[in-house]
Length: 118
Image (cartoon, rainbow, N blue to C red; front, side, top):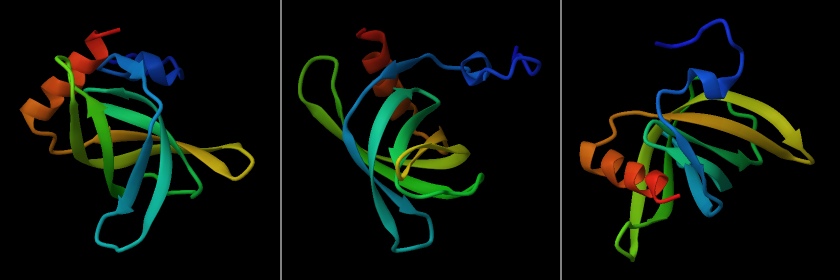
């Protein structure tokens, strides 16, 4: 059950997240505009990252990044997401929280395996 009385975003999540710092690209849906980003954490339901753009809530985007596989190697991910929060963080960077959309179950499973490797 979601706790709607607690303003802490971690309390509203349905999936555990793991810290994961890597470079990524964010492309706005229905646009050629893209941004370089640095990921902060990822889970089976979403992720957060730093980006040098103030994106409105409900903005649809595609995130490209590489994720380590449980048994070694890497998988290149192209994840459809929606912005659920964007706040100014420091200097010219914004911290955005993304919720994945239309995530195939095999990709969700790979992300969950990565989270569980902690």
